Length: 71
Image (cartoon, rainbow, N blue to C red; front, top):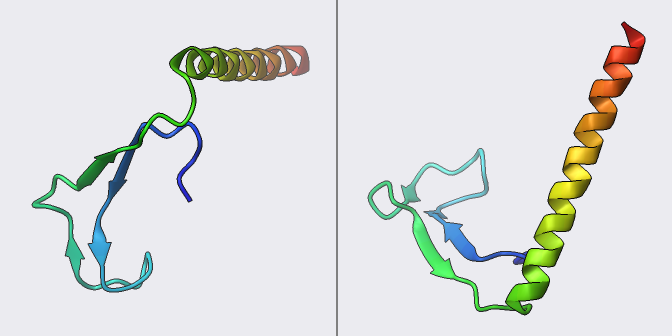
């Protein structure tokens, strides 16, 4: 499943699942890449990206404030 916000798909080929494969084809250490067609308009993508960054910053701030409070 490709995430909705994916821009590029990177992959390698193996002869088994992660941790159990013995043979890999990783395009001579460069991996394989494919551009994911735009699934959402660019302006919506950037709005969602900004929102995700905002949420992450708020969570980090909350953790720092909590750590400071516990000291």
